[in-house]
Picture 1 (spheres, helix red, strand yellow):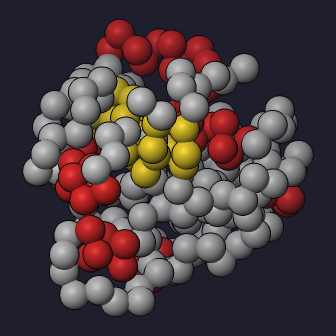
Picture 2: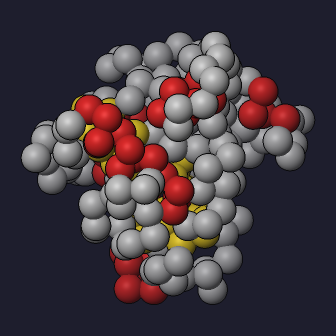
Length: 212
């Protein structure tokens, strides 16, 4: 059973282009496509995952704008609780076919083509969260380092297509499994995990507010 350390509120969508532009004080548009041009470091800061966001990061700017501490990138546990919303099967809805009602999956989309797809085009899960599976990889705060990797494998199973030699603190765990990886093994809860550099823009961001 996955348990969150503190009560939290999680965004129902991955961050969109228009949300980012509003936060970054750029010209706001109505773009509802997923934001995937910002690195983990730009969103959180260069410090480790257990630290609070730096003041010059996007999460830091959100804290300053709202006057509310507690905004950050989601953890793996926070994602899984929201994605499962009380279910215990390997797939949301109990099967791969049922999951396709909730996950944007198209193995024919490659490269950055999926970035033109709007969030929320599939059904929300029982708790109202969209795109927790499929559409795009999402960053988490969890470090994919050598000390924690064995525990991740033991809890979640082998990560799909991820070289296990890349196990250091410069990586963060990805969850969700992006469009184009749409096999039944990948969009299961066990398969929907990977890893990426903190300087990479190869994953999206879903923000969380954790009760102080």
